[in-house]
Amino acid sequence: MRAGFEECAARLSAHLIDLVVRGAHGSTIVELFIDAEEGVTTELCSAVSREASLLIDARGWIRGAYRLDVSSPGIARPLKFPWQYRKHVGRTLLCTQRTGDGETSRTGRLLSVTPSAVLIEAAKGEAPVEIPFHSLVQAVVKSPW
Image (tube, rainbow, N blue to C red; front, side, top):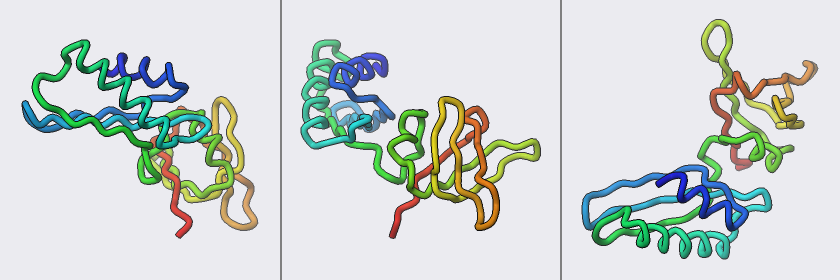
């Protein structure tokens, strides 16, 4: 099912970030969280919704009534893919990183993104910190308010 929705989103220049299916037979809720390098618009969500609904019906993935919700991941959801970070350069992130002693968290402004790491502004007077993607457990954009 996920691969089908990923293909559906990709045809519309979007990426499937998360898929949640919940509820019981006859009242199933399917939530698709999408993102796009140019941003998510209501038009994009509507287009993905139409395509996804046709896919669900054609493949018989859900029996009975269902509700399909398509939206952006929102600010509270962790960033999952390196390309998402580029959209947030200049914003403050809360990053959790694997270390030899377990995990450590750091909050700082995202300065830059490379194919293998992010560069986070450190405390005043300290050098920026590079966090390789392979050690990044989670990163969440902090709201400015």
